[in-house]
Image 1 (cartoon, rainbow, N blue to C red):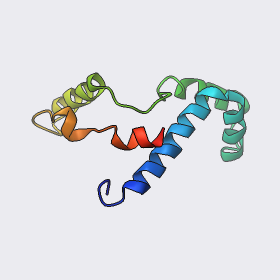
Image 2 (cartoon, rainbow, N blue to C red):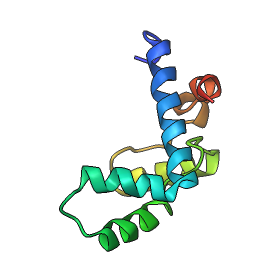
Image 3 (tube, one colour):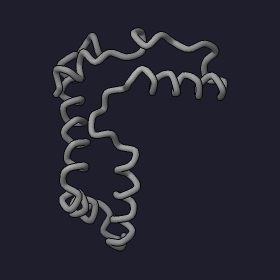
Image 4 (cartoon, helix red, strand yellow):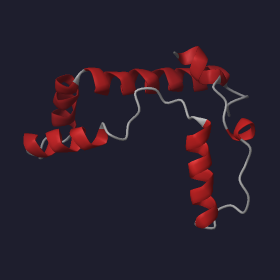
Length: 100
């Protein structure tokens, strides 16, 4: 899909970049959105959830080579793949650069 519909990939990446930045930059705004999406949850639970989520959501979705290497090692240990794939064959910042 990335080569067939590059404009769709860039639009998706732009939305993802904007969302990642928003949740990091506007905690209370994100809390208001979460309260609308999850009306049955107490605010304290949503606040704790968002605090935890922010620890694993990067501000920038770029994948460093070391991060991909860690993922490849995990996939090999779990038997999902037999050998690691080269960084350049798996990942490109081509669309991310256009989305920023």
